[in-house]
Image (cartoon, rainbow, N blue to C red; front, side):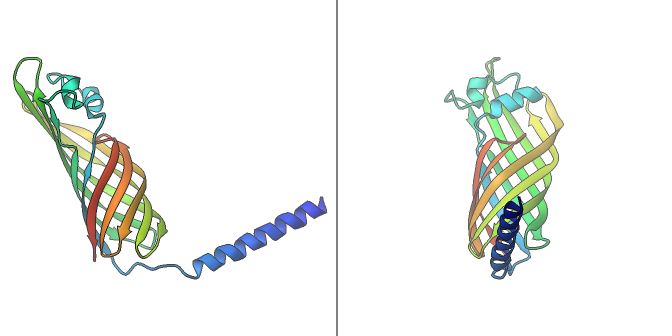
Length: 192
C-alpha cells in the first residue's frame, strides 16, 4: 500500500513539474480585438424551420436542396470580439440567411432570418499562428416570411470546437449546432 502511495505521489510531482514547464513558454496575444466574417452551412435547415412553423408553404425537398427551385444561402455572419484575457473573449454576432422556393400553393416564397447574438469564446490552446476554441452564442432572431410577416425567435449557436490559422489575418473553421445552422462554418478575420 505504501508503495502505491509513493508511486502516485511521484507521478503527481512529475506531472506538476511537466505542467509548469509548459506554462513557461506561454504565448501572449498582442491584439485586443478581432473582426471576422463567415459562412455556415445549414444541411438540416428545413427540419429546424419546420419546428418553428415558419415554412409551412415551402416543401422540405426545396429547403433541403432536393429541388432545383429551392435555394438556401446558409448563414452569413459578421462577428466582433474583445479579448478579456489569454483564454476568454466576449463579443457579438450579426447573422443573415435566406430560404426561397416554390411552395405547394404554386407561388415563389422567400424567408429571411436575421439574428443578433452576444457571444463568449473560450480558447483551449493559444499559439502564435494557431488557436483552438469553443464558442457559445445566444440572442434574438427575426424570421421574415413573405406570406405571414415577421416573427421573433430565440437564436443560439454552440460551437464546441473551432480552429484559427494565422496571426493578424487568419482563417477559421468550426463545427456548430443551433437554431441558425447545423454543421460547419468557415471564414476569415482580422485581429488588431
